[in-house]
Image (cartoon, rainbow, N blue to C red):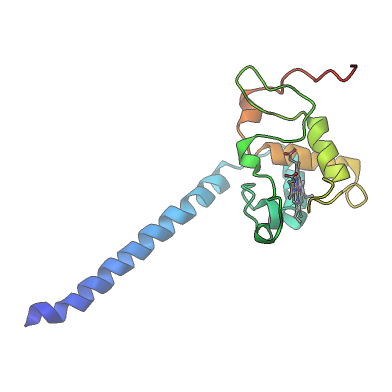
Length: 156
Ligand code: HEC
């Protein structure tokens, strides 16, 4: 008889351990990131602006999963991939579709027509947009490991 009366306790214990394990697993990337932040001053300044105005779409960790992402189409860019849609540079020899700083600047400044990506040019000055460029690049390690490919030739 004592066995059956112990069962709920064991179950509760297992559930408790399960919750803790899931919690630890979910918080791990966030903790790891906090530990790893030693940003250059320009990127650090950009981080403040990003947290104010960009993270609700692009996500706190730059993964495109901000709270507003669910209601916009196309989806906000996931900066952790380092793959940019709007670029004037060829793919690199390593196959990376990287944007130049001027491309990222243009997308932020002018916005992306027919998407929910706003034009920030009237809201942030050039220096601040430069800081945002520096910060969004920190989400993808490719910007430390590789350089954007050759510039596209538009001369016809
Ligand atoms: C309301 C949602 C929203 C907000 C707020 C927002 N974005 Fe975006 N952003 C988007 C969407 C959606 C796209 C992708 C559009 C597409 O796929 O064509 C995008 C694309 C971009 C791109 C282009 C990436 C590429 O592939 O070339 C950059 C850079 C960018 N956002 C930076 C920012 C920055 C910096 C801020 C804050 C100052 C910001 N965004 C705020 C929705 C948002």
